[in-house]
Amino acid sequence: MISLGTGEPDFDTPAHICAAAIAAINDGQTRYTPIDGTAELKAAIQAKLSRENQLDYQLSQIVVTCGAKQALFNLCLALLNPGDEVIIPAPYWVSYPDMVRLADAEPVIIEAGIEQHFKLTPGQLQAAITQRTRLLILNNPSNPTGACYDEAELAALGAVIEQHPDIVILSDDIYEHIHWAPEPFMSFATACPSLMGRTVTTNGVSKAYAMTGWRIGYAAGPQELINAMKTIQSQSTTNACSISQAAAVEALNGDQTCVHEMASAYHQRHDYFVAALNAIEGFECRLGEGAFYAFPRIKGVLEARGMKDDIEFVEFLLNEADLACVPGSAFGAPGYVRFSFACSMEMLEESIRRIKRAVMA
Image 1 (spheres, rainbow, N blue to C red):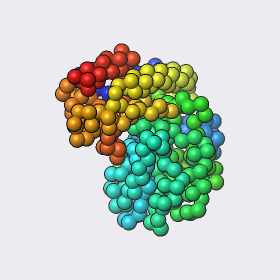
Image 2 (cartoon, rainbow, N blue to C red):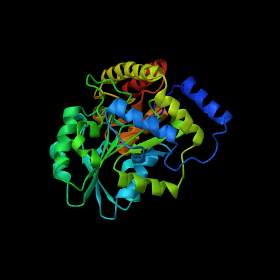
Image 3 (spheres, one colour):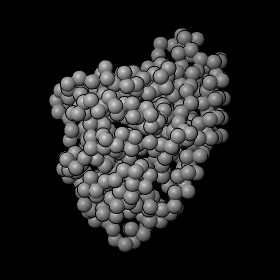
């Protein structure tokens, strides 16, 4: 069985980061930390945001969470009230709509398919906004599509938001460093500085540093929202793991060679796998700019084999090719599937052989 379903780096956490965690254990850093994170980690996040994103925050505007997922969830609980609406472009990360619903708000799903490169347009955004719109969620680069908004595209969306002063932007940048577009990565608040006071930028160390199990994320944004998120966290998880926080300090402050090496490997795998999928009749796969996913439309395969939907196709691959992937329906995009290429090139090559055998049989 080969699994291309997991959104997790296949690399080990770099040795210098692990060494920092071991040193923290030996130094007795095993007690509660401040709810919003250690001073050392918040300073490292502050420096990272200034150095890499040209975003300047006070330490009090930063909160450390148990993974970036908790930062997103805390924001929804802190911001949203019953009846509020949240605009979510589809395809979307699977948890976004349910986080909104758990906050008693309503997700407003806007379809952004392969024809528009999986990106929300300013016209779509304007048409979706109502008096109840409170939040826009942008994931950049995207899970599941690998699409990434450039500076001009973000600025165009920002121009729409400028007209609606009650809307907050959630900029989910967790795949920031897994990025290979010609233009440098651009965070929303960097592209739209006038909206920085209404933008919550979330990120973490899970993807870029192969630290998924360490569970360290963070958010930076307006003081009032960050304070509310901190209050919510104080009554749920309290602080993130003290040892993981020490490791994250080294991740952000230490040698970044590992980040570039892993991103380069993902880029090579992306180029091979997308081209190989497009060479199979019935698959239509767009080139991505980041993350480690391929998200092909499989309309041709479904029609050729008489299958009703992407869920049936995923079950077919599981049974006939011993290959696991995720149906696009889970991401609000029926008729697509998501493959993760966070695995070896040899495994990707074997996966392509299995897909070909199954769909051409």
